[in-house]
Amino acid sequence: MVASLPMRAIRELPLAASLLLVGVGLFFGGGPGSGSLPWLGGGALLAVVVLIATQGLPPGWPLLVPLAGLAAWFALSISWSALPDRSWDYANRTLVYLLFALLGLWLAARTRALALGLMALFGAVLVWSLLGKVLPVVYDYGPPEIGRLRGPIGLWNQLALVAAFTLPLAVWRRRLEGVLLAYAAIVALLLTYSRGGVVTAVFVVAVWFVLDDERLESAHVLLAAAVPAAAVVGIAFALPGVTGDGQSSHTRWRDGLIFGALLLVGAIAATLLRRVPLPRVPRRVLIGIGVAVVAALLVVAVVKGGGSGALGNGGGRLTDTSSNFRFTWWGQAVHGWEHDKLLGTGAGTFHVTNLRYRGSFLDYTTEPHNVPLQFLTEAGIVGFVLFVLAAVALLWRGHGRRKHELALALLLPAYFVHSLVDIDWDFVAVSVPAFLAAGALAGGLPVRRVSPFGSLVALGAALLAFVVLLLPWLGERWSAQATVAPPARAVTLAKRARSVDPLLVDPLWALAFAAELRGDLPTAYAFYEEATRKQPKNARTWLFAGQFAYVHGCMRAAYDNLEKFTELDNKARPNVGGDAYNKALKIVDAGKAKC
Image 1: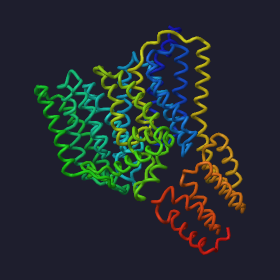
Image 2 (image 1 turned 45 degrees about the vertical axis):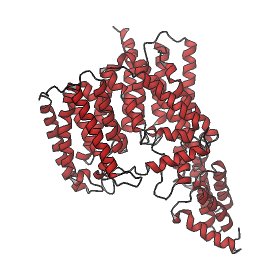
Image 3 (image 1 turned 90 degrees about the vertical axis):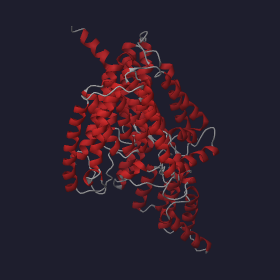
Image 4 (image 1 turned 180 degrees about the vertical axis):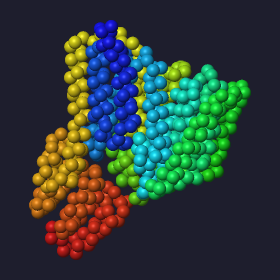
């Protein structure tokens, strides 16, 4: 019995480690930031090394080669990137997703347990998110915050994607917990006001009904959840403390408690509706209803028209057909790709393209909200092809699955469908479970143990990978601390940041500010100039150098730097560089510039 305990621990390690890490990513992923990458990646690396040493490498790993190639290509793009620090971040992000897909290979025999575990985690996220509306102490939506549901992931669209992930798992389960989970998912989905999330949810549910063998039972679960969910959300729109922006604490508490009571009543109604039998409906009738719904949606879209203007964050956006600048950003991505078709501008650099082609200061973004187009413009044809191959390789193993494996197989398609209109690659909260599930469907039982030497090599590679993940995190951390530290401490921290991540320009600005406080203006300006040389396509490096020169009366240097800034970002607000540039230009033209 004693000897069997370590063996049981080893057998349970893949599932336990995977679910623990996914839970950390869902609750503490940090939104689009990169702060969680070294810790999630480090945990996945540790689990992979232990599994290689104790169980061997399972079959299916060749399917991950294109994804590994994409991570390598992103890393290589640092050498020509307009924003090399961002490219390193994207390479690390892709490496983490590769590690979770690799970790999933060992779960091939535990897909049912994985499905149940993901159900529990997604359910916990949705309940916690809704609880933030019931009890304001859980999540702060107070003034001046936007009321769209988003906690704990940090952004409404990605929370909506989690709700879409949840629905096929809920209808597969079909028990009471499945109905309640579907109910929570639909309420949360609608309160995010995410049109892309709703479309993705409709897509995965439609595919489920096409491929599932027990459609009537699935429809029963979905209807029992959807009817009370729609009623609860409808009433929630009349509660400003739940669906309004910038509400006071008093209003939020009052309406939140009412909303909590509504949620409980809705859950009871869903439980009771589950017991009401549904009449048997022929498959062709269900297909006809689905076609009619899609046709109605298309008619509404045609009648209302499209457009690319900005949208508010109210519930009315659910019926608005404007792309919220997405059409504009997609056009910018295509224009950027036309200038760098093979290599692209470097992973994670679309912001440079956006500044170059945007039509006003309103359509500011860092990603085009379409992952395939983003990789095309940032990584060129090579990166785009690697992305497509990685997607096809992982999606292929999900074909022909049934029951819980079908629910798992729909996670990655939902992820890719949603990524056509959003920035999902930036969020570990939604990327990690999708790639883990895809890896689980691609894997199999290990065929042979790895030799001790092979295990040692794996350990060495894991340590190297962890260092690659850790260094940018340390650089950003020390750089951020340097910006608020006293001059002497700021210099120490900035030098540390440069030593671990020489691609960053922020430490140079911290050093410049410290030198300025000491009164050493030539040294300060030299650091600003170094930043422009390090990232000459980054508009901010020229802006900061120009502003420094302008403030200190050096109009020739101010003009030179701000002219470059206006070339890279000619639609910036006038008070962001433009006004100073025009004043410096007048002084230079009048021959009054002293330096």
